[in-house]
Length: 118
Image (cartoon, rainbow, N blue to C red):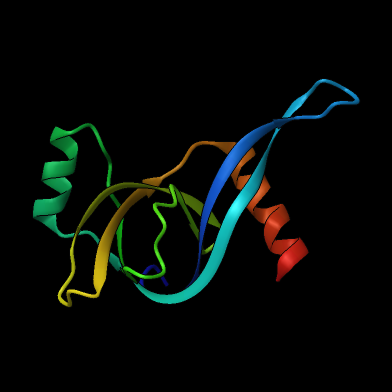
């Protein structure tokens, strides 16, 4: 099922250097979990996104009080990047339009966070 109520993880990821090995890895430094309705992006939004160079796929309405400018969303086993924001139907909410992320390391970092915290 593409759309519907889903567990959505809002997250930010940072690159951190391991002092022992010197390798850089991505880790989640801020995240929260919400249950929200995921919808397909409207045709007009898709067209505006394409003009800006985005391939928008889903829209998610989140409470303004819960959103702290996180850049990534994870749901249905995939990682998405927030590309545009807009007004929602209620003034207490905001609409996030996302596209699928190709950052494999960030996806692994979010999945590690999920396994450790949920």
